[in-house]
Every structure is written in structure tokens, then in C-alpha cells.
Image (cartoon, rainbow, N blue to C red):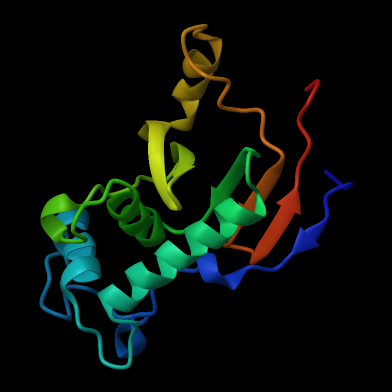
Length: 170
């Protein structure tokens, strides 16, 4: 897509783990199993010099609201890290951000949220959570489902970019 405009948006970045960045979760007292180790650490750690979970959730809330207002009534794709996605799901579904409420987001999977604003508050009208990319065609071809994939903008945090993407007619 050589026609895409690229901008940077670092607010969609992963939570900062401070002194725990780059450490093995087993060395920090957590198990090696993905769910009980990495995900538990993500939710429960008060990482030295890291971003506190409540501050992270506040950043997520502000980022979602700003993005919603910027791209109001547009479909966008946000490509970011699993921890941000897990915590954003908690925020969007109005759940407490705890390990008990965690939904580890798998690599190669997609979550979709149709957001609406009512009385100044953003809510979820409908969603898909943690769907394998290989299964998305089935959702698109089901006439009872909204057209999920007519996106105008891609927000890519792993590269720090916002890319305008027109897919009409493709």
C-alpha cells in the first residue's frame, strides 16, 4: 500500500514494565505457563519504575476516547500488543482489570468492537473477541453479520504508525 499516509501514535503502546522489562517471568516468581505466568504478571505486578495498572487503564480509556472522536463513524484497525488488547477489552466491557477477568489475546487472532457514544460515554454495540484470522472470512460472508472489514484506517503501534488504508473495491 504505497499510497498510505503514515503518522505516529505511541499512546497505543504496551504497558511499561520498568525494571521487569526483558526479564523472564519465572525469574520474577511466576510460572512459565503463558496464562499463569505472563498474563498473571501483567495484571498483578507492581513493577518497579513501571506503569501502574490503574494509570495504564486510564491511558487506555483516554486513547480509546481520543481515537473514537478522531475517527468518528469510520472503521479502523488497531494493531497493537496483547497486553494492551487484554486491558482494553476489560475497559470496553466495563470489567475490573484483574487476572480473573483476563482474556489472553493470541497471536494471529483479532478482536473487533463496534463502539457507539451515548450521553458522552463510549460503549460496545457488538463485538468479536479473540477470533483466529483464518476464521474471519466466515464472518464476512455471513449476511446476518455487519460488514466488519471495510476499514479506512490502520493504527499500527508495533511500528508506531497510523496508516490510512482504503480497501473499497478490493
